[in-house]
Length: 515
Image (cartoon, rainbow, N blue to C red; front, side, top):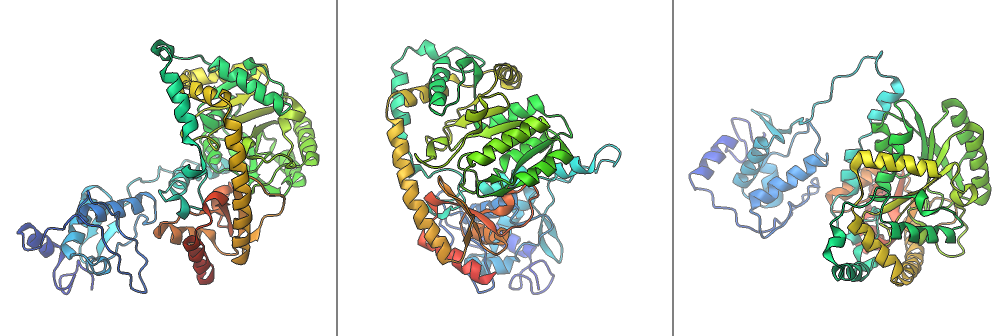
């Protein structure tokens, strides 16, 4: 019988009785130690967050709160009984009672007499709009739960336990590049950093980016380049400029998931285009274009996220022809540009189109630091001017200090060698990861792979693998994250820089055997 029944609950004590004993001091105070997990064969509950600075009650409260926030424990779910959780953790029932009561006070749980504790619905859904006011497609777009995806994607995990990471581990990067740039800036007069910056961004950096684009055979003057706070802000500015509620936006299926929610928030209909080893399926693309008349098509032409493949020259020419024929713009996200090995077969749409119908995006967050939020847009002069106005309205200027740091990094002469070292290391890690995944029976996506990612079919529900991994401290990236439909999938994205841990591979093998 459960801990909230009148007889036999929690070893004969009701929750109320346990609280009374605790308040009279008959239960010993919980020392500040990490909880040791005792798992019966039927239990798969993780340890609370260990910390020498937290009591057992605080640890248990934080553990449950995180699981509820991340929707591992969902609204309406019954929590483990007081007796069960105490036995499994090897702790006092009084500790569990106090933690549950704190969660009730915080609004995470509700207590039901005679039944137990349940996860409380904390964010009721908004009333459904009438069919007359909202189209079916617009309603479907709003179902994309980007917050849940981001929480899952950025769940705290050590790099070696996180094959689903979307960036390189810190020990793959060179913090001294940024530290040296900061020291150099510190020797400059302080009044250089007091102004609000310019709407298009730090001019010397834009001039440096113009030189880099020339190396990619993309001609763009400094006036055609707009600095942004990363690729995410660049996409946001483009969405504000070009999209109205009901407009169609095409993305790859699979593709980078963050933009799905951004476009849906703008009221757009996000439509996936099937992908091949050489780029989008152009026959499918043309059928969709004829039926939906999209405003934009967003694509990684080089080192596509998540497949790690690149657009072939033949597909690139055909894609530009379709864009011209059906009058849509192409947004080319080249965030993985510097990770592309020399000699790798890759075609950039902007180099063929010269920014007439292509809007080109770049960033350095994958090669320098995830928190160095400096990206850029290169576009037709009229488009660049319009995006600058949109940037002013959305948030004035971007932080010029970050832009000055990036400028020094790019001009001090060490960045290219750093990138070469990273590419060489990725090549070795990719070969090792490929062999490990194939030994486990996973099927790799076809095509020539390079960069950070491998896309592999597990033949199982990757959502189930991800949920089990989350409970054991592993971060996986399931295929459902990368599809606008959000449907369950067997595919998974593996970051080759963080997929070599033997324990992680053993855990994955166990899940493949279990499911």
